[in-house]
Image (cartoon, rainbow, N blue to C red; front, side, top):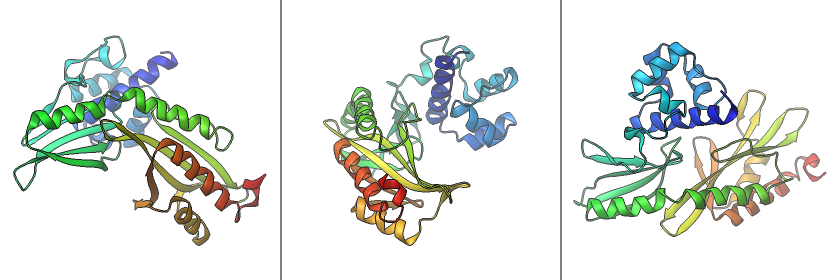
Length: 268
């Protein structure tokens, strides 16, 4: 399978997991594979063998033709279809970057939540009186794929030469070496989100990585993150900030400038 086909497989597998509300760990348990193996499939690093492919399709109730990109649509995976389970109604964006969830609120209205696809972190919430009104509002947000792609392109252009090239085909993921001796690096990830049908922002996550993965910030690094992100949200050990694409680019540049006080190599 060529690179395009591989990308299509991992995108569709991720989409199916999101639509079926099944975690990578749970899928691994069902097909007799490790979570690491499933992660490789989802991230496009490895293709499943014929036996694993059969089990994946069986557990997710999808066809191999659709998963492999030989079939254009799978009715259950059509992004325009809303799914209802119990008192909750939801749908995903075509690229699985966002999930819309509608559920009854305590006051009798319906609460629409827009969630980040990978982490299920709620990015936006609003209440409506009718299900059709909530669905219509969510559809206008989730269908803005072109605007989200434009945001990623803007960030790529703005940070060209500032960070390493973007290594993700779904959002923006790049890094900058802080210290060669300790192999510490700044990792920046930007996911385009919508806080309304006519507004566009990106959620930018900053983290410090080392040889073993994400590490705790030093006091100096933490101070730099606080100063550069100002109104950042600290979630799961990672600093995050929500901003317009242009402001996000400036926040990254400002952070690197601040970190340059502690890591002279950044100023070269």
